[in-house]
Length: 145
Image 1 (tube, rainbow, N blue to C red):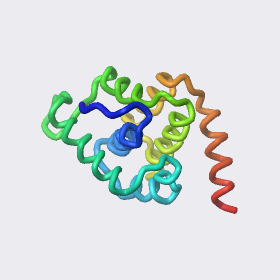
Image 2: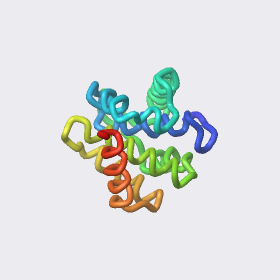
Image 3: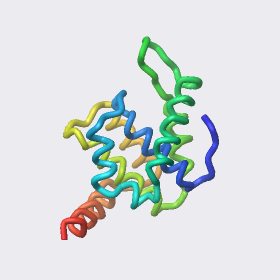
Image 4: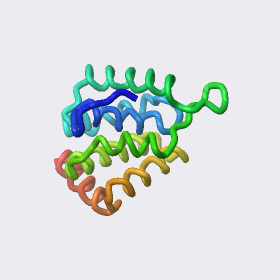
């Protein structure tokens, strides 16, 4: 995997890309959720950056991930931890986790890979789900006003 500066827009975009691909495919609803909830604005990720980083991430996956079955790519827990560790700031981590929750819940179904990723991020970053959900409620209420 390529290296990005910790807490950079690219490092954040890569974790967001990981969430978009956690169920095995890039979904239109996830992209729409990313845009609808102003995720890009909250994370300072523009469309050009997310597109570039998503492509770089996919290329890195093809080169470095295990592929036990044709068409399936698996990431080791250590690789995911490495990607999560590129975000140091508690505030960046919380904003990113809120975006991840929006993305994985976009289709109304949580796949196994999505659940594992969210719990791994919570654990790795030392966050409690209620902290993030409370902030989500506040954000959604302010967007609705």
